[in-house]
Image (cartoon, rainbow over all chains, first blue to last red; front, side, top):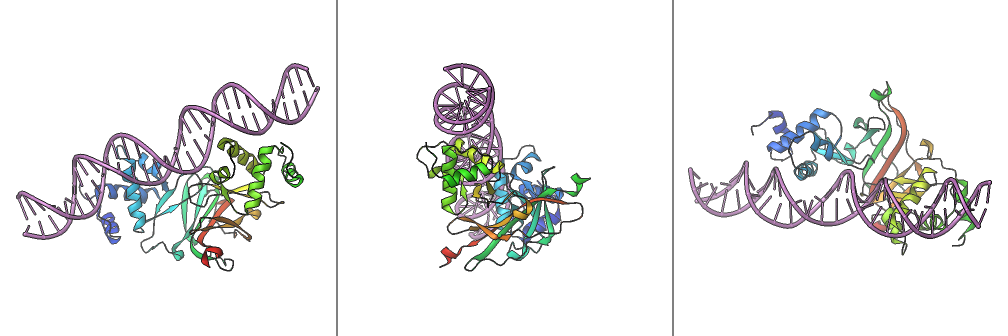
Length: 140
Length: 140
DNA sequence: GTAACTTTGCAATACTGTTGCACAATCTTT
DNA sequence: AAAGATTGTGCAACAGTATTGCAAAGTTAC
């Protein structure tokens, strides 16, 4: 399969991920959907791709900070593209929003996870902050 | 089986939950452990109790605001007792802490989930804010 | 005491995530 | 360009957690 898009290849290579056909496709799906998707949802967007392949593709992406995962409490972990400069460090964390009506989970990229003063002796590594409610589209 | 403890019965009845032996036992386990427990962890503390019974007991507890659930990203939902006055409304929400070393999840009851200004059109219903790191015990 | 309702235990199942293995594709070296 | 080394993919099987149907046991109301 030919390179589908030079931009995608660049993104992958910037993260030291070899741009295979599969990876281009998975990246494209995440890019086009503009929201966090579960493994199952990604799988649904293909005809004949094996789940384990997508699973490992996502693992590769995550290991290389191309995507981040969100546990929104729906039972399935969801994945979304990181910003170009993201290294998934505490400063890169943002809040996610789960709409209880449409079930979609979105990145609130301009809402960083607030820094909290932990009790004495506790150290911070990472955080998962998901707000549930009704999104602006379902609210109309 | 006899009522094991008048205090437990009171707590259950305040929430309109009939104090059966099973429920007293599950409440007791949650009360004594002082941390959030998964269904599996609760099951382990009994000799011969069916998982589905505990599952439904927890569901009953949660439906009546006696306990709240926390999805700490470990794959299994955990449960912890609510405060006496809790109604699981936004004001009652607090942050949870998952220690990546010992795997224990604790309620940070004096750290309320901060109120965030959501983008235009979004409404707030609930939130799940879990901080991961090393707890004070593992840090020593 | 009997009927109606609730709770429990057992068994089976669904769903999500994960791994082993063999084959295919790609890269490296000559 | 061919051979060998490395990496990626598909298939199948499995693991862990959550969930349900059903019948028996327990409880409550009359």
